[in-house]
Each structure stands twice: as structure tokens, then as C-alpha cells.
Image 1 (cartoon, helix red, strand yellow):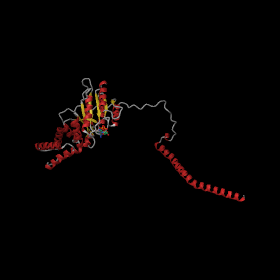
Image 2 (cartoon, rainbow, N blue to C red):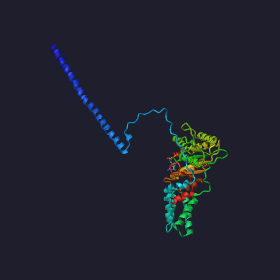
Image 3 (cartoon, protein in one colour):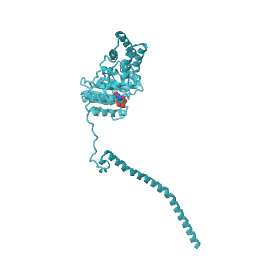
Image 4 (cartoon, rainbow, N blue to C red):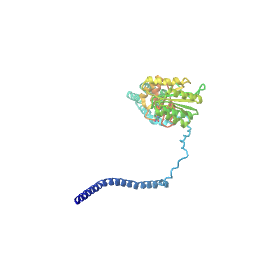
Length: 396
Ligand code: GDP
């Protein structure tokens, strides 16, 4: 019995020692982990007040560290702020106002030509250089040759060349190349009791939607009423973009609730709305997927035919990114084969574009540049003015 007690006591003692050792083994890791993290927390909370104290000292605001008042639940949800209507400036004289932007990006071309033409001796190499400058400025090979030949004849006939004479000669030559017989006026007047309808076409990314928005603003600035049709249903953001432009100047935007809706039906609805509301102009933005000429022809052809069930399309404006040079010209050719383009909008002429594209594209399509985009600002769209353009090229 005594032996049994002794064995029991020994077993209990061994068990107790084992439990103690296990607890001691586990505790330090767990406790250290917690402590370390507490320490970190303490450090952080210790530094936070200092940061906010410093901020309040720097800004001098007493409220910076004051406890925030308990949040009060508003009686009813606040309505989203309504954008206040803007009053855009009229379109007249915009190109003169924006000429400095054009001059910044184009002056290289103009001053290079002026420099070459002012040389004492104009030998064959110099004339070749003149032609090269024109070609690199996107004027196109044939017009570059013609301009060079014309200038050569003039120099021969006129003899002596003061800097003023050189400038006047080049100005005259460039102006002759930029001017066209066709009118640059946009047809935005109501006729036969219906609004004018303008269709904006071009490859995505050229600035079509932006141009629609800017043009709507400029028309509103000129006192006209406008409906915008968001028929670029391919690019999801385009309708929202147009909506924002419209809201800013009070132009109604007709769009579809569905993604990838039929562009022709949106265009039809927009024109119908314009007719019902007796506005002056309906501007229709379209999608420009250029993967296949036949698809493009089908899509734009359908949009145009469907609109014409209600009224005539007055302008088809082809939007081209002026910085894309020869590539832009290729796009222009395709669009011109698909629809009857009545005017060109050259966007991004404020950037790295070379002004010669104005001459090249007008020649290529036989259609005048009617508007130019000179920046991303809302009023950076101007009716094209040849004289202001040439003077900007020549740094005048
Ligand atoms: P869309 O796909 O043809 O409708 O092209 P967007 O209208 O969305 O324009 C594409 C980008 O070009 C946008 O970032 C515009 O702000 C920009 N953009 C449009 N016109 C001009 C312009 O005249 N100058 C500059 N610098 N950027 C422009």
C-alpha cells in the first residue's frame, strides 16, 4: 500500500513537472509576439499625436486636432450638385487668340524655310533642302515640289531679296496652297423648319467626342441651340463624356441605356428629338472602327440613311489627329471612300503636329479644313483661318 502511495505521488509529481515545462516553453514565444506588437503599437500611437501636433502648429489651425463632432445623419440624402450652366465665348476670332499655340508647334518649319530662302546664294542644294523641309513638315511630295518650283521662279523674277520680301513671298506661296475655293463655313442653320444635322466621323482616339463637345459649346456661344447624339456606342465612356459636355452648356444629350446599342437608332432618336424640340443643330458622334472598310461603310452608311428618313445630313466632318501625319492621310482616304466628307477637323495642332498636313489633306480629299483643335481646353476649337495659320507658321 505504502509502495502504491509512493508510486502515485511520483507519477503526480512527474505529470505536474511536465505541464509546468510545457507552459514555460509555450509562454515566452506567445507573450513576446504580443508584446512586440504592442510595443510597435505603442510606438506608433506615440508618434501620431506628434505628427498631428506638428501639423496643427504648421497650419496654425486650432481645429486640426480638435475632436470631430459626432456625425449627424442628414434628414434625407443630399442631391448630387447640379453643374451650373456655363456661358461659352463665341467662335469668332478664336484662331487669332490661339495662334500662339500654333506658332509654338509650327515655327520650326516656317523659320527653317525663311532661313534657307534668305541665304545669299540659292543653289540647287539649297532648293533641295527647301523641298526637304516642306516634305518633313507633312506637306506631301507633290505639293512640296510645286511650292519649291514656284518659289524658285519668283526668286528669279524678283531678283533682290530683303528679309521682308522673302517673308512676303513665302507667305503668298503658302497662302495660295492653303486657300481653297470651297467655303469653310459650317452649315449650322435650320432649314425647311428642321435643324441642321452634323455627323462627326473619324478613327477612335482622334478627338471626335471631344470635338463634338467643344463644337456644341462654341455653337451655344454663338447663340444656337444644340442636341447631341451619342452614337459612338462602341466606346463605353463616349456617351458619358458627351453627357458631361452637354450638361455644362445646357445641350440635351440623346443616348442609349444599353451597351453596344445600334448607333443608327441612337442617331435617329437624336435627330427626332432635335426636330421635336426645334433646336438649331443636332450633332452626332459616331464610332470609328477602322478594322474593315466594309464594316465601316455599312455602319456609317446605315447611320446616314436612317437619319435621312427624318431629314438631310448637312455636314459630315472628318476628324483627323494632325500628329499622325501620313497615317492620318491614309485614314482620311478610307473615310472619304465610305462617306461624302464635307469638311475636315484637324485636332491636336497644338502638339507636335507639323502644319503641312493642312495642305496635304485638303489636296488629298478636295475638302476644306473647317475647324482646328488647338488644345484640350473646352474652348480650344477654332474655325480655320488660313491667314492666321500661315502667319503662325512664319512666326508672325
Ligand atoms: P475619340 O475616341 O475620337 O472620341 O477621341 P476623344 O474625343 O476621346 O479624344 C482623345 C484624346 O484627345 C483626349 O485626351 C482629348 O482630350 C484629346 N484631344 C482632342 N482634341 C485635342 C486637341 O485639339 N488638342 C489636344 N492637345 N488634345 C486633344
